[in-house]
Length: 253
Length: 253
DNA sequence: TAATACTATTCCCCCACACGGAACATTTGC
DNA sequence: GCAAATGTTCCGTGTGGGGGAATAGTATTA
Image (tube, rainbow over all chains, first blue to last red; front, side, top):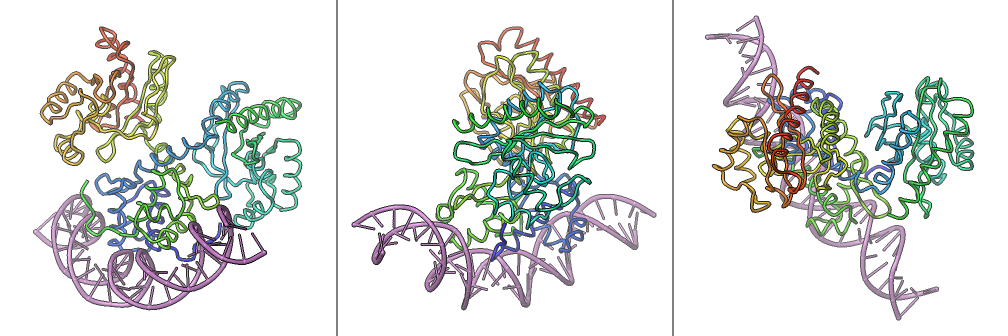
């Protein structure tokens, strides 16, 4: 979270180039150069270096991110114990409910979706594998935050603030902390259209013996179906159950 | 394939650090430093820079690759037309055969697995999403090579040679080119234990209207089940069929 | 508890090298 | 065939990357 004292500038420019390639879905040299206020020469040198290591590819004069990122990404996710143990349970959740079930983990104070399974009647959301979210905007994120040390949560809020996504988003620190308190006690979290209008969600954290929060799993659906006892009782039980199974399997793996 | 004329050295050292983190599954500062013959100070600066951008994480004094790679990787693979169109067909293939079905693409002269689906009786291979292979060692790779320009194939062989994996691996250029000729004519490729002893495979390329090779799909299984007419006739038909469907859907998407 | 041996972190100075600029190829469009 | 793009290469310069050492912090020992 803190900033580097002696950052390596050329690494930062390389990262800027990579970010731009992602944002622009690939680009030509000159486009990149004036997009980033760098010389064509400079950008060219960086691109060639990156190409040599597979982090960038070129087709004719179009440069794009290389599959090396995919290689690294898969490597990382496969090393995560919670990933392996959660996938089958998340798949189960989506089968049982017919809705969208997801696995989220925290890193750098943000949430990243590691897996999703679409049930028969599932919504299509913008929550693909690899998508980022603000933790306070989702049930998944709140389930995680509720089990992090308070000073960590403060640090995260200091860094990202509490940006608003819908009129229901929790935007005050007090509000959030009081809800996290409840979540910690009851063991699961709700999202009542706090990130997307019309979408409700319920999530439970994956916590191993030693108290580490490894992530959270959830079921999400349209408000029309997410209501009454089904939403308040049945679903929480299902989700908490799945989270517990994952927690145990993660502990002993 | 060619080398950068003016490589950016600090980017190269950053990449070396990242590679080391992958190879070592994370490491401490000092371990990294003497593993790479760099000063602790230098490594520290790089790590901090990378951390600030999410490409590295630290838990206490242990540094590891960050989930940012996963974010980038998913972004890239989701942009690939062939990925979206192939996934359901590959899943079908594994359902129909009960074996392991896969999707491979080529980049930088190597093959990368983008997707795999395990049927009921499927083998567990080291061919996960994101794994790399030499093209000449697999049916998938050969199906791709057979449809690349000859000079490209030569370039790839010049760069990687033809390393041997089993006694069946094609290790001479002439052998390979003559087989590629056959593959191009018949439209599918065999792998008779050329990469792993006891494992046979059959693959067909995904080629769009304009002649671009987007990748290849395959079915793999133990030699005991992959034989006779089933292996020589039935399976090729299934695989070619799937590849054709993917080709068409990729063309018009 | 104190001393020791590790860590990570910071600082500083010097030389390498990253960068900008310009010249050079190469392709595209009019 | 000229003009206006592009990507590529080169070179000189001044800046910032890297080595080394000093510092701070943390574990491990007696």
